[in-house]
Every structure is written in structure tokens, then in C-alpha cells.
Length: 405
Image 1: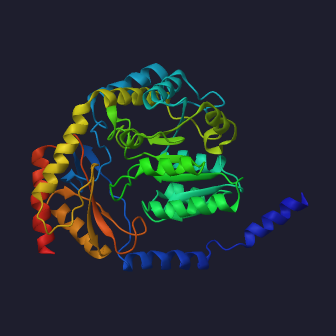
Image 2: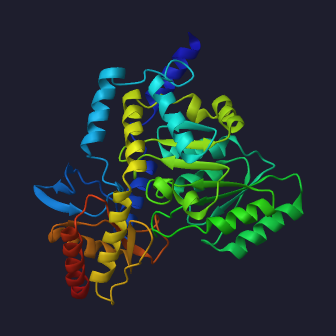
């Protein structure tokens, strides 16, 4: 009783607001705005390849729905069927009662398609990456990451018990030096090399064949986050590793891009899957994705494998865009649907993005800290649902807007 009284007295004397926190927050927001880095959500409605914003329809070139599956009738029908079969939610975490037949079917389907013994489902790529890096390495291990890896990988590396080292983007000589240093320090250290298959802000590919060879030479594991490659590259859309002719020890595939839905899977061998099931807190303590969603993802997985025309169309649209913009425009030609247009200055990138919106095109400006300082850009993304007329309109408008700046 005395303890309860003391606690009550402490709370009653605390101020309703803390001026120091308020000052800190206000100052940080003002600094962001001054630097041209202030971010705002836009409340949108979606119709086909356009978004509705403030009563205006804008053609969308900022979607990661690369294969155009997010609104495909077959996917919508599959999710509706899943709701009828399995209900709205899973009801629990996977180790309680949240692992359903639809989850098992999707895991088996992914493992068979991508050539792994096991697949484990997660609610997001962020949680899948963190589950692996928080669970598998320990304080005796070393994580070696590409400097442009996704924030989920970098944050997980910093918080992991392992030592993290970074190498300059796609710099194979730097990677080799780090692997040599790791091996020379102690033969008992386990190195884990981590890279993305396709880098989300540049659209470029990791040199996976050489990285895989270096990992083999130095007895290191290779982990590849293929969020932006799976479905787009490789035979039947198997992704970046298939495209490069390698097999990663751990492969992360996410469903919020080419699959047109959300969620992720960790692809690995049987023992690694069982280890994650036993020890990965992100897996153990998160409610499973709805089984109806897993049912829809199975339909998406089938379409990705069967619809080669979607990947062929993406290639053709990318070529058309590159050929249609003026040579003075710094549009980067890539093998992927991600076509960055480097602006440099954050204020200017935002200005160009707003000018495009005024002309009916939604192209997001990407600014630091998402990309390095002085490399603000327009991140143009193409989808298989775009038409040639859409691409020509984009190119014509880019030519006008960039020349006016």
C-alpha cells in the first residue's frame, strides 16, 4: 500500500509536458524543413496506374508494383477466396495457433521455386532482415555489408552482437580486404557478407557472382536481400541470384514489390530455418500474416513464374524511356524498373517533383538520409501496367520540366 501511495505521489508531481523534449522535437523539425528534407505523407486513392491526390489524377511513376500485380483481377480474386476459406486474420503467432495450411503451402511453393530447403514467412522485409541479423550472428562473428544496403540491414548490423564492417558500394577489392582481415584476425570468426541483389535507390545490380566466389574462398556465408530483384530478374522471375548464377546461403524475398502485396520470406536450409523458429524473436512473438494473404501470395507466385511477358514489357518500356529523354538529362539506364534521375540538391529535386505533379505525373523526390548527401534524385519506377503512351508522356514532360529548371 505504501509503495502505491509513493508511486501515485511521483506521478502527480510530474509536469504534463516536458519542455526539453518539446524544444528538441521542434528544433529537429525546423532543421529538416530548412534543409529541404522535410517529409510528408500524401493521402492517395489508387485507380489503375494513377493516384488521386487532392482531387487530381496523377500518373504514378513511384510504385514498386513492378509487375502490375497489385490490382490484377486474379490476385484480388485469390484474396477474396482466401477470406472465404480462412477468415480475416491468423489469430496468433506461428508457434501458437497462427500457422495455417495456406502459410505452409506458400512456404513449400517458395522453397520449390527458388531452390531452398525451407522458407519462413514474416510480416515485412524489415522484420525478416532484422530477425536474421539479430539471431544468427553472435559477438564472435563479423558482418560485412555494402554501404548502400537497406536501412533494415544497417540498423540490424549496428544492434547485432556481431562486429559490423562496411565496404564501399560494389567495391570488390574493399570486400576482399575485409575478408582477408577477418580471416587473419582469427580463424574462428564467422564472416557473413550481406548485400542487396538490386539496390533500391540506384537500380543497379550487385556483382553477386564475384562476391559469391570470394565468400567461398574465405569460408564466409552470403546473405542477399532480393526485395527489388525477385520477380523481375532471372529465369521465371527467380531473382538476382538466379540471374547471376549463384545461390546465397540466406535469401530474403519480399512481397511488397513484384508480388504486389506485402510480407517477406527467409529462404535457407532446414537447420537455419529451425534455428530461427527457436530463437528469432521477430518470428516467435509476431502475429502471423493473415492466411488469406498467404493464399493470395501463392496466386502471385504462380503468375510471376508463368507471365514472362511482364518482364519483357518492363525491359521494352525501360528502353523506350531512355531513348526518349534528352541526352542532357542524367537518367541512369539500368537492367531494372528503377530509373534514377540524379538531381543533387534536395531543394531542386523537390522542386522538379512538384513541377511534374503540376503536369499530372507523380514522381517522388528521394533525399538524404535515404540517399547520400548531394545525391538527391527522382526515383522513377516503371511497371508492366504502364503503356508506351505513359512512357512517352513521362519523357516529354521530363524534357520540358528539367530544361525549365
